[in-house]
Image 1 (tube, protein in one colour):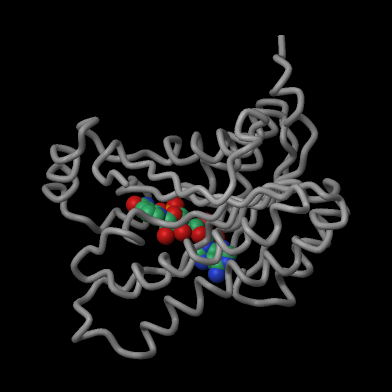
Image 2 (image 1 turned 120 degrees about the vertical axis):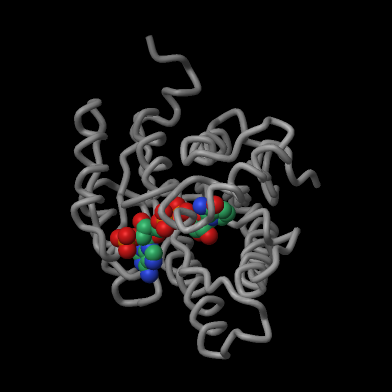
Length: 255
Ligand SMILES: NC(=O)c1ccc[n+]([C@@H]2O[C@H](COP(=O)([O-])OP(=O)(O)OC[C@H]3O[C@@H](n4cnc5c(N)ncnc54)[C@H](OP(=O)(O)O)[C@@H]3O)[C@@H](O)[C@H]2O)c1
């Protein structure tokens, strides 16, 4: 039987950006398991997004796919309109889509690569936030989770652009927690450590193993680990948590 707090999540509407694969897909499925209706946003991977929705529906959940490049304001506006039309007003926004990480030393990084990563990812936060926040303010209700990275606070060699943008994400989330708190809107940041997804598939096995061994919990992350933190933050039990930065990394980076 469904417990009280779960009932409070049931029927809410979530928009998860970049939910066709990896952390976003796991998050969409985890939210749907709590009875939340979910928009599975994708950019290029239509089939993968449809599979996420099929998985959700197979478990009795409700979800739709919406194609949109989150760096494009018009596409984002249409995505938000489709969500409201098909599922209802948006209660939960998970900003997960990230631009590809150019892994190279700063001295080899071009300005174009830097700008694509930094501005691409910030646009992917800015436009959905702009499209969703006004109705949240009006309804005096909302929960926003930004997916950052442990690298926002602990730089890694070759990740200067990633660390730059994720530090920006942390600052943006904290600023919004301050500005939107009076309207009953909570804004938090989840900072994954190394997590096994397509984005990390290029890493040598030894590096993954080395990270696991250096991690107090002796393993690297799986998408479900990150999804679990998002579920925790959107739950009723987290009702007094805002402006928080939650590392989900098995303890390799303690703050
Ligand atoms: N994996 C890690 O170790 C790790 C660690 C720390 C932080 N993170 C962060 O976690 C988030 C998800 O990473 P991941 O590892 O799950 O990545 P992933 O497996 O590569 O998946 C990326 C997802 O983002 C979507 N996406 C990319 N660009 C988009 C755009 N312009 N518009 C809409 N969707 C877009 C992709 O959709 P399509 O396939 O449809 O294009 C895909 O669903 C990112 O913000 C990343 O920085 C990951």
